[in-house]
Image (cartoon, rainbow over the protein chains, first blue to last red):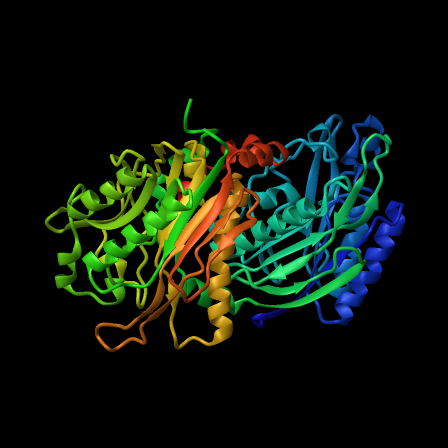
Length: 296
Length: 296
């Protein structure tokens, strides 16, 4: 395996139906393959609208089993082009038991592994605790033809613990399918601070762990189905960072884009030699990280 | 206590002797007080040259006890101006037992607490493991007249664990006395990546914990005393970030500067309401953070 890995991120707006979204993804994956990509990352819940703006029991109809019809179609894309594909689905595990799940397809189309979103947000516009049971598979990377992938999902990207646990388990890259955007009522300064914080947080994980980070976010405006909220302007800006947090590629805030980048996996080795953070972790003094808070 | 807090960072080059360095600091603290600062942060090992470029037993002569002559002089500055002062000293604890220690003086001049650097680096130009025993006081913030301060030192700034443990202990700000710089032999692209990574890492701690971060770094060139290395060009760029990682103030890379900023402590409350990361930490799944690595 060469150390240079071409990767592709599919950033886009909701196409209105599962079929239309998967159709668009098929097209993008074909383009990515033609450009030489061997790893494709999709955005969070790419099969439809970001439905968590409201709490509606009918939205559970969007969920499917894994494996299921969507994984079949996604699996075929990976196999057809011989590339690793990281997808993000609303998983129905049982009646009343649903997860926000990333699925990793290996280059032969088989499901190499899955990751169930561990940190679940819940705030106005992002009412995910209604829909998603917190993941119970832990922070386990998935082995694939292009390396060991530390796949995490959206809200996880704010947690250094998640990134670190993936790195400690030997992940060679961190990947984040995401759906995050602006409340149109916030002023521009606040919007900029939020977007920058989101970028900084993930570039920070790259630095702390000496690993490349791939983050794929949706774009476009989606109205609040209840009409009560102002909707969400998803802020795009999917990006790829190297193991010093340096930008390798970044997308616009408002366009459907196939973002291509070349990741040099040797750089992690070299960066970790000059900045051997893993060597000096004070594991004897980290016990309180498993506490909710350290004061009464 | 008002929520607006004027803070000051003293960035500078080595003045050649303990007396000259403390004299310069006295002047800067007076300027900071005149500007209304109630908290002053000094750079790492501000009493002299950054002596860790080589391993020389004579350098232990620089160390002093705490309390000792330098803390007396620093204490007088804090008391005279009625401000909180965060200093950084080479601590002699016993024969053959030395630490890199931050000392926090309260606004009445008393020593409010100390922090012994927990993560100790060791790489060409920064041979700290020869001089500094790793801290044994843990990650404990210090209560002062301006709030509970999470003081960490330099290499700690690359560790999200350290910042998180301070936040979980109720720290209201994170403070980093620092001495970091460039190897003049690195090309400009590498130098820029390193400086940006350093900034990103610490702004990332601000974001992850919803806390302001103050980082005070030295500037100026210091030659390698052995003549073998190329020396270190300390990269300055001391800065203050708010709880979304936003820059509140930042200094140049190459000038002696008194950097002033106003920190609004109410913003942490507000930012943590919209981004309640502490609410959703998966403490049930973080146990492996105390392991060296998660694979054999």
